[in-house]
Amino acid sequence: MQAKEAVFAAKAYIAELMSDEAIELPTLEEVWLDEKKRHWLVTLAIRRRLSPETAAGKIGLAALPTYKTVTISDVDGSFVSIRSQLLKGLVS
Image 1 (cartoon, rainbow, N blue to C red):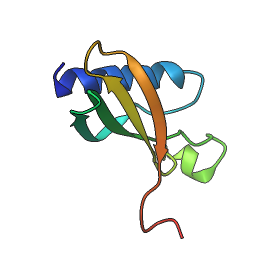
Image 2 (tube, one colour):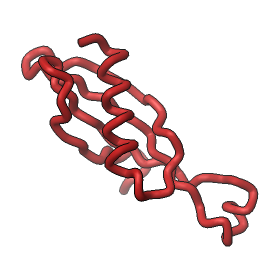
Image 3 (cartoon, rainbow, N blue to C red):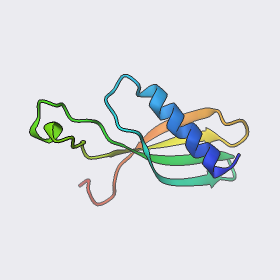
Image 4 (cartoon, rainbow, N blue to C red):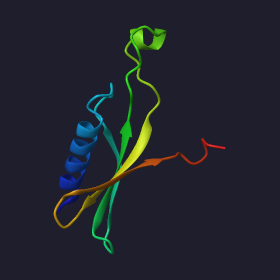
């Protein structure tokens, strides 16, 4: 599996799993291969849409992103896990 395929698979899994939530399309932050475990780790930024009743929502703004790392098997492209990532320096 190539990195591009792993990213495509990760985005598809996130979109499917979060299909009932108001999110924008996930954007790629980073991707790397854990050669020992034969897993691709794909970090995506997820932005939830704000309610149209809020001032920010009225002008189309999205909430601050959250970051999810999706693990994809390099062997068969199957989903392994999703983990939330905290931004260092923003959390005290």
